[in-house]
Length: 251
Image (tube, rainbow, N blue to C red; front, top):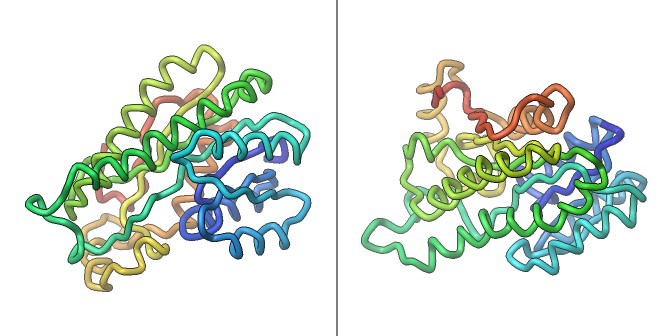
């Protein structure tokens, strides 16, 4: 993937770090978007000084997201041609601590919508001029299998990811004639990331027992699917949602 210049939001820690490292291992150049993980981002840049740049950006603010794309262009001298919408705003996968139907508020939904849907909108819009110059590009949105199988009812998070799935399909329809493929990779509970660190072991074990593969998906396995959508192997694929969860959800 030496021809890929990739922006990964939330790319310094958790799942995002695995995605960043997978792209780097495959030969891509990566813009690492981060919000609060400056040290982790700078550590990645120190390890890969020629193929990374780290930029602080809150995906909820369009001007900060624009800086991600601009930094990639300036650092690597070519247009950004892959964006990965991975950033997760203020969320922990702890079923015991989640708000119930009686407790959840509209503000909870709005917070997750801003991060997942508006954040993706900001990055895609910011990258469109680069996409046009590149002649083809890839958008990869990070979703969840909870949309199909809400085994734990994280109401706000799941609703926001459902909105992101709709954006994936409608943007794929409009951007396809411009050579832009837009797809989603939806994981189950991943073992483990920062967001899933609060999940009890018995929950992981129960999910593993329910999958045909009898295992919980790892961040590295999830990253493999993201790289597929960034590669030439997916050149005829757009508007799709690939569920990567060991077969727990079958489409």
